[in-house]
Image (cartoon, rainbow, N blue to C red; front, side, top):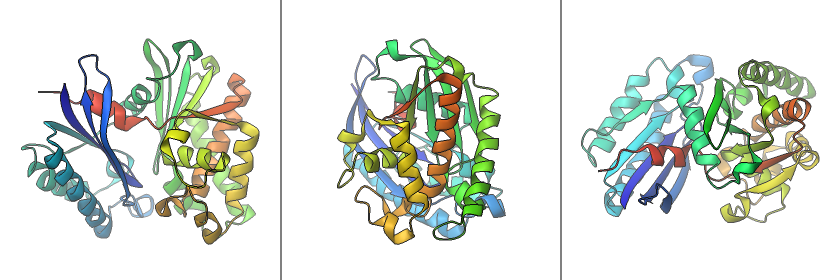
Length: 316
């Protein structure tokens, strides 16, 4: 058995998984953590990572490095996704990660992965516990700056596409008021439909039987849909939300103020101001999957790209 660490640094959050990998390749969690650092703050508008966003990420990564040292993980893989792919000053970010992670495991640093690899890692992590008879699966990783849509089954990934729309990017681009105006919501839906349509031109979701959603927007929507008093990953994992209930929750969130959204027990403080953008992308996906594949419910998985990263770590 080997102990490894996986770090996923996205547009909105940075997450850590330390896990033991058995001889059968299965993961046993040692610890999972998530910190909202908003690395992608303003990237859509400026094309650069804000210094304060890099500093927030450094603080969280230092905490993670300490845990990696304390738990005795022998190897680490850190991947960076949409925000760093887009940033003109991304070397500032990578220099920081080399300094922090290299102090724990020599030579360790972050790597930018392509949208295609991001999609494949998400698929690997998401469907591991699902009955293969429910496939083909369409797995959606709705992040802060991009959304990955992957079609596959027990034999692996058949097609995948990453489109540059996510909860942070859509919110910053379109949803400027609190709550957003009808005109802003309509504009955001139009942008989301265009970007999702672009992805579905490459991914034949008509073949899918089951939709699996991963990442913070999807898990939060499910927790609210099931009226959880607080966020409970065990209750959220593999929970199901019918489309009628999903649309109801999304519409309610879009009509609420910041304080009203923040009052939900399962709502992470760092997600309050961007959940509306995520809700719009989610409802567009529901519309498309219903019309194209006859799918009528969303299954939410707590296991996602982070698990896929951990399973890809070369063990010593």
